[in-house]
Image (tube, rainbow, N blue to C red):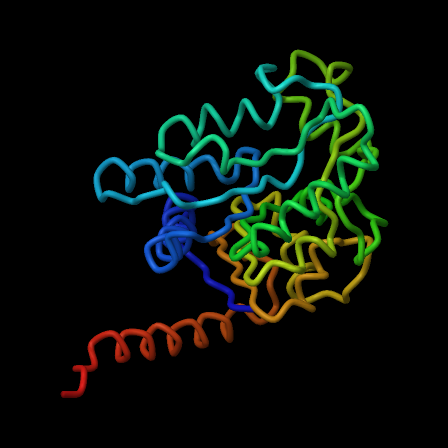
Length: 268
C-alpha cells in the first residue's frame, strides 16, 4: 500500500481527485469505480471544478458504482443513483449510457448481480476503484463477516451501518435494511484501488485495515492482498497508525522520484 497523509480533509480530497483526473487524462476511455457517502463529496466537487475550469473530459469514461439501497427508486433523494446524479454526473459530460449504478429495484436480484459482474467484465474491468471505509472497517456494503472472495450480491446491513446512515434519513426506521453491493472479490479485481478516509472516527478502522491482520471482520483489510492500493488520509484518520513516520518517509522518497522523472529532459 502507498500511504499518503495530508494535513486536512480538503487536502486529502484534492489529492484523491488528482489521482482520478490524472488517469482520465492519461487514459480517456478508462473505467472508474465510484463510491457514495459524505467522504467522496469533496472529491467530486474538485473533479467538477477541473471539468469546468481545466477541460477534464469525461466523454469516453465508463463508471460503475459500488452499491445501492434495495427498494429505493433512482429518483429517491437518498438513493445512490440520485446522489451521483446530483453530486457528479449532471455536472460533467459523461454519457448517460456509460453510467452504471446498481438497480435497487431489480425483480431478480441474483440474475441482476450476475449481469452487473458481466457488464464490468465487458467494459474491460475497472481501472481505478474509489473507496471509502466504514467505522467498522467495511468497504462498499461488505459488512463484517463478508467473504473476502464475494461478488456482487444482496447484503443485509448491520445495525451499526444503519445507525451511521440514519443521519441522511428522517429517522433510522426509514433506512433500508438491505443493499446490493459489489463484493470484496469484485473490488479486488480492480487494477488499482484508491481508499480515502478522513476524520478521527475513521482512525481505528484505518489502522486495522493497513496494519492489522487480513480478516473478514474488517473487510477493508483485504486490500492488503491487492497489488496496487493507494490510501489517502488526513492527519486525524492517520492518528492510530503505528508506522506513520515510515509512511511519511516512503512518500517523501516517492515524490522525489516522481519529481525527478518528470523534470528529466527527454533524449534526442
